[in-house]
Image (cartoon, rainbow, N blue to C red; front, side, top):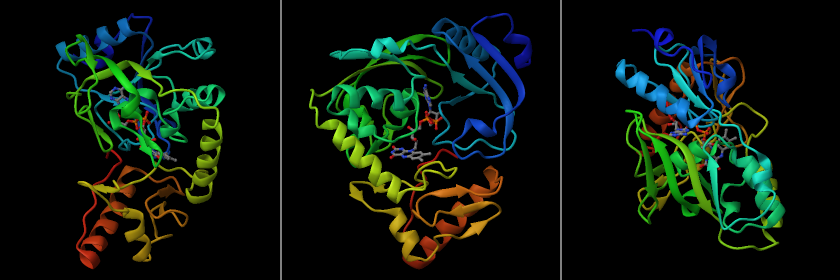
Length: 298
Ligand SMILES: Cc1cc2nc3c(=O)[nH]c(=O)nc-3n(C[C@H](O)[C@H](O)[C@H](O)COP(=O)(O)OP(=O)(O)OC[C@H]3O[C@@H](n4cnc5c(N)ncnc54)[C@H](O)[C@@H]3O)c2cc1C
């Protein structure tokens, strides 16, 4: 059975076949594919159950700030868009229960307004809450994992599950509790107290990011993980020392501003990023014998 035959007649599930997906990643890679947008938890459950029963695979899409979509793909992308009433953030709460599709920028505005300690950790990260939890997104100021208390998900069979978060639930840029196909639809998170100076910390950190990262270009953030086991090891520094900044191939450029970023400067596609990553990896291996794992999901 094909996807258009099974996902019909549900008001919370929208299927768009052969859609232009270029605008669905922050790197704006040229891509076309099937997109399923789901606007309720019931819709998500039904959708995952139907896909499973019909033996159809899927990929989960957040803001597309850390994944590259292939030029064409037979596997549909599944995106959550649960309506969110912003008045929920008009006051400080002890714990917050939020849809996974809410963006971190909305949460950062709330943190600035009320001085929520801990929330500075995700300053400036473009992401949905679900994508940030999946990745344990973070900055020099901390990681989002430390703020998460419960994760609500639907597994690939269509069953609901609630995960209680513990001290071993997250690692550097990854989680240790999601199984293949698990879709986070809701997150419970806390703050670590109130401190009115937090807005200044956030402002200063945003300034720093603006000065040091190519935030006006189409990128996917850091291409390589900076952490090798327990050691912090800056991939960008190695690439910079190799003199590769500015190297351009088929519309992809190693950022002249930050060597761990790649910029789509001329309608590049997935294969162009993969090719440039290979060039960098080969050079790093040849010159220094070091290997870096990619942070971006290829
Ligand atoms: C300019 C720029 C700066 C960045 N700076 C940082 C930074 O400082 N720190 C940092 O950590 N990252 C950074 N990133 C990377 C990116 O913002 C984070 O990795 C972010 O968490 C990705 O979230 P997303 O919603 O875009 O997820 P996507 O990129 O869409 O998906 C990422 C992964 O999460 C999975 N996923 C997404 N949503 C869900 C869900 N609801 N349930 C289950 N799985 C899901 C996807 O399948 C995929 O495997 C940056 C990116 C850009 C473009």
